[in-house]
Amino acid sequence: MTSESLLAFNALLIAAILSPGPAFLVALRMSLARGRRAGMMTGLGLATIATMWTGAALMGIDALFRLFPVVSTLTRLLGGAYLLWIAWKLWRGATEPVGGETGSAPGGTGDALMLGIGVNLLNPKSVLFAGAVLLVVFPSPLSGPEKALVLTNQLVLELMFYTGLAFGLSRPRPRAIYFAAKPLFERSAALLLGFFGLRLLFGGAGGASNQTGP
Image 1 (cartoon, rainbow, N blue to C red):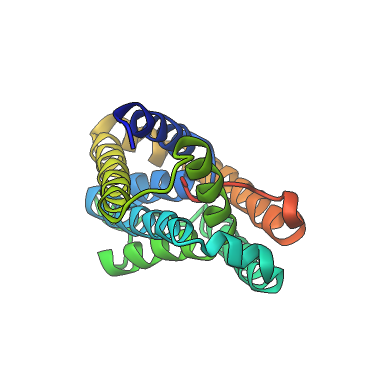
Image 2: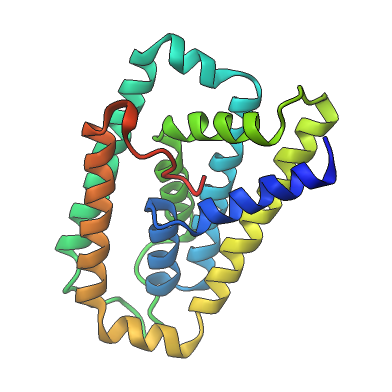
């Protein structure tokens, strides 16, 4: 593995994280609605599972999904239903006030962590995406230490991104804009999450290739 290939992997990873998808949308919403800690915990869940999927791809589980499509299909259907459930909750709660003067909604950081885990866990397309990226960027087999470096690199990069997002959106100006436009923002987010959920449910093999961030 060369430094150039690792840089190429990072460039693709950053592009995937920034692409509009459920992971980015959920991290954005949690940081705005519930504050810095909730945003960071959501990001921790998202980053951990995204790195897990890359680890699975490194172990060849993407080939297992191709050999046994029913496993991928069942996970994809669960993921689609989960995103639709989140979308419905967002839509129904769009006009409800966010509790607390600081904008912290009810609930601890544990549920924010579980939300991040759930969004990225129920998306088998992520491991297929990771497998494709790894094959292109690292055509030669990686050694054990090299695989560990790739996974550590991804986890750190994703945590840095989501932490930065949480800190940036916890500032007064972005939060004031969010609170002023909460119904519009949350119903727009609900529609987008519903769209991604339907893509997972009905997209088949050509559905959303990267819903995780990756």
